[in-house]
Length: 415
Image 1 (tube, helix red, strand yellow):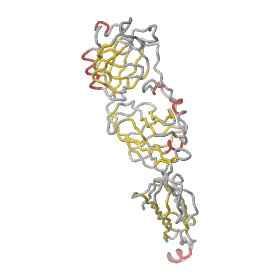
Image 2 (cartoon, one colour):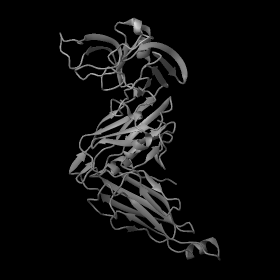
Image 3 (cartoon, one colour):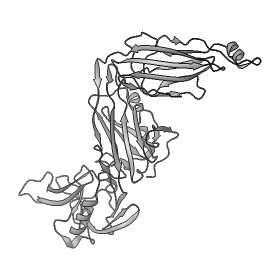
Image 4 (cartoon, one colour):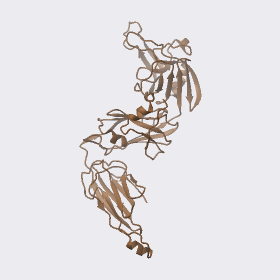
């Protein structure tokens, strides 16, 4: 027996399956089948219907028997569906593709085993206005750190956020709890409750074809992005001991002498404190020209210098990098303008190790990292993060090939 489906279509008049037989308490098998009540199945949308709304899906129900097989085909593919536990109903799992012809074939059988087949052919309406995924982070096939968020951007505003969020499926080879949070009407971000398990393959599928994202716009195609979680890299940076302890897959791999922000500020509004909290590596560059903000050349406090081995950790100009000088501060005092300086050897080693999404947990500063400063998403308490979901729930990814499933209620964040 096979079951298939994978999109959604409108509720038009049903197609009735021809009657079948049911069991009887007496007589031989053929007599029982002959006396069994007729089985029937109804397919919605009905045969011949056109301009079906693609977000309404296909539904098949059985009476006086149970469904035996349902197949939905359209656009050169077989559509995925879900059969109820009692085998009395079946429906598509995802929305249907706009402007597409579909054929539904359903068989039902009665208690005596007699099978009857019904078919419905219909077409979905074309989308007058469309919406698409415009960008996804991480990059395709990228290996990232255990804190990596999934960031999806759309090319136009989403007003029906719940419908779009339902169409977002996260798969992984190791289960993990996470939740989507809408940042704007065009950006939604998935973060895990804790972190991704190391050495995990992850796919995010936006089943956007047929999703009604606003009153007039529909998605017209799906989008899939696959990436890999690499080794667990966690740097624990103390601005009080002036040391960074870097753990790889849970084991201390290296201790690096560091120097953080000197503290205080200036008359130009610059804050020289390094932010404390859970940072994520956002990217790295072999060299960056760093210039004093809001200070002109020739003014007191001006600097413009080339800095090497830079790992970005916020949008407020913070990096872990090779110290350009003042080596006497490393491991002893905080002398920088806010970045975390490292020894030459330590910076090179850390730079080569770093992946986007690696965790850098900095302690010892009175300045806290804001959740929306770079990728500071783990700074937001878990319950608060989940409230940003249009569906007000978290999801748990299951083994690759399965969909995310709701988790109720969302647990509190460890931070």
